Image (cartoon, rainbow, N blue to C red; front, side, top):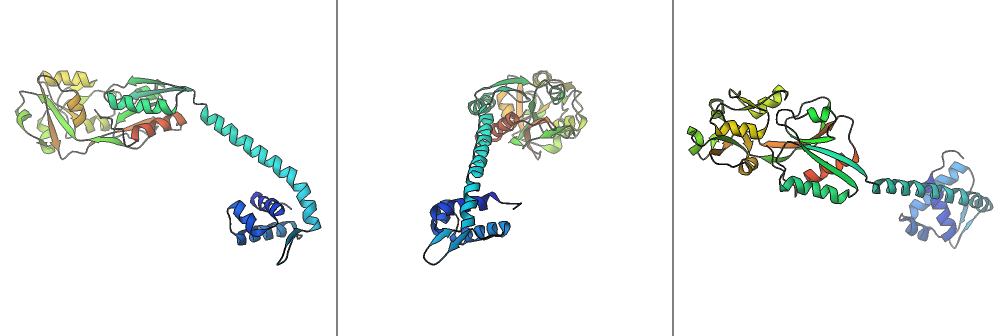
Length: 298
């Protein structure tokens, strides 16, 4: 009698109550032929007939009666154990206490705050802390354990970090002093960037990541933050790539933003330490990538 299947036992118990293959199938949401198959499989496992079936009636055999008497309390106990496990899982899901620390490398505007609000609505007992991540150190706070996950600019090619889906793709614009020769153009081809004296993020940002911020080789100064970079831009020291939405947000006197054609869009992703994903991180990733979210990348 080893290897008994619970769905076969359940079918036998319901059949013993209904004494009708059609009604048993309807209760179990299976076909009448499937009821017959399950019963036959159970009888083969046990090695004895449990049910007598004629054209007019269904009844249990004497061994079927005995088997039912011994089976029912054991099966009911199994069901209670399973239900207790389900309730424990539901309780664990409802217990959404804790703290989620999020770093961000984009403007903390209404879009980011709405994503945080959506997360907090779904996880009301979770405390959410939001911290800005410096332009020049996109991954340091993660590695030091200061944040649990961070919204950063792509690309991310760090073997110790996991990367969520990309989102908030935005056309890139070139920030320049309003007196710059390119400032009067409606748009700028990417081929012109090597002559634009691009400002690059400072170390410790990885070389590949800095190169993505200054494609074609930045020959301008370095900056540790966006505000520091824009200060250099306003002083006419160099130019700086920002996404279209961030360009609109950081608009200021003396600085002009010109769209750049031919560059890949600037995109964001939520990243976290490899092997350290949690339900909180997964839920926040969902809030960020929902269709109504549109975080502006730097």
